[in-house]
Image: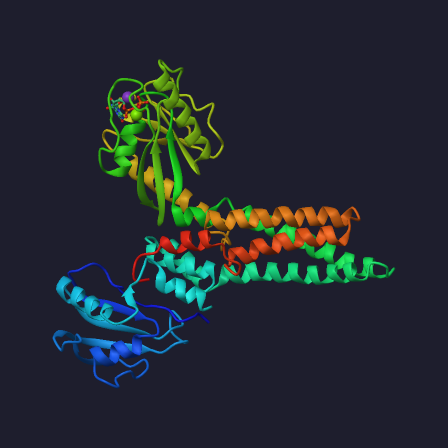
Amino acid sequence: MTAARDTICALASGPPPSAIAIIRISGPGVRVICNQLLVPGWTAPRKAVYGRIRDRSGEVIDEGLAVFMPGPASYTGEDTAELYLHGGAAVIEHALDAICSFEDTRLAEAGEFTRRAFENGRLDLVEAEGVADLIDAETRAQKHLALDQLDGRLSRQYEVWRSSLLNALALLEVSIDFPDEDDAPDETREPVARTLREMEASLEKALADDSVGERIRDGFHIAIVGPPNAGKSSLLNKLARREAAIVSDIPGTTRDVVEVRLKIGGQIAWVADTAGLREAADVIEAEGVRRAQQRATSADLRIQVRAADDRTDFSECGEDDLLVVNKIDLAGENAKWPDSVMVISAITGDGIRELERRIADIIRAKAGSVGAPLITRRRHRLALESALFHVKQASDLITRGGGAELVAEDVRLASRQLSGLIGEIGVEEILGAVFSSFCIGK
Ligand SMILES: Nc1nc2c(ncn2[C@@H]2O[C@H](COP(=O)(O)OP(=O)(O)OP(=O)(O)O)[C@@H](O)[C@H]2O)c(=O)[nH]1
Ligand SMILES: [K+]
Ligand SMILES: [Mg+2]
């Protein structure tokens, strides 16, 4: 448990004015504060109490409800209380001032309640990230993923991996301690080698997930690409329902990548308009083309746009690219296109709804492609990649008959990565980065 520390308070609900404001208090001073501000002797655990809430001079702050939740079975693991007041700016300010007038009591920093929950063992680091993600979730898919993470599904798998590494380490230590015993090596080596092989496969599988968890959390990337004047910017504006990018009849209008954030197929998608691909006329356009190509390569989906009035050529497109013929309003009655091609007009809006539906289907399929992802942030990926590296190294060593001590060193390094992931061994910077992204009051 933690040493004596400050009592913290914060507005936990949205900014005023609102119907109700929730003020949260956590720390050793909660009982004293509640007894002063509310009725003396009021602190009945987990019961909503209604009454007048006063500051220390006796002035009424507001009428409202209060709930006291004694530690350690509270969110933070400490004594906590919540006050439900009218959500006006003056009420909130008066209440926070009154609470902060107590000794060793101050306003909470961003994420500080959850950080205390983490430090008191109520949540591990991955679960704490789930709390932040749940608050930030805008789509059902994000919410689902965050709830799952908060519930410990990711942590449990990380824990399974870590305990098999610790078992392997225990076996290796036997052969380190008894290097002269003839039977020890084979008896311990085979199970260790098997564990390492299994872990390697299982980590590789988790990592080969097309980054679906990260995409659900941060958004899928879609790039609109094609030759100059195909109508890429016009299409972006149509999808965004606003004039996000400049449209003109001059080829080479778009140079920088213009990106809009949309909800498509129940997911967040970043749709990027890019410079027309051609032999660039100047250095600025050349840079635009380079950026366009880079975006196209890294995108989860490329929308290849061609104008119906050129000789429409999709020959250089990738297999999974979405092929779109634009300016269908200019094509003659008898124009024919292959079934694989979507036909639109960014001017009249023809075919746009069908295109949106197709994009939504593709994104939905990508989001559902790996079932339940085990990685939702880059932090997780880097840790698991590094764990895999050491597991592989250990596995190679043991197969080649390397010394138990060397194998053990890699196993230890792999297990440290998993410990860091769930925050069991914490580097202050990582904790700071995770918790500072929270909102105040959480
Ligand atoms: N008739 C017709 N004109 C279109 C259509 N879509 C775009 N245009 C016109 O085609 C010209 C080029 O459109 P843009 O959207 O700027 O084309 P772009 O592909 O972004 O061009 P760059 O940024 O230069 O690569 C503009 O004059 C548009 O008004 C369409 O569906 N039908
Ligand atoms: K243009
Ligand atoms: Mg453009």
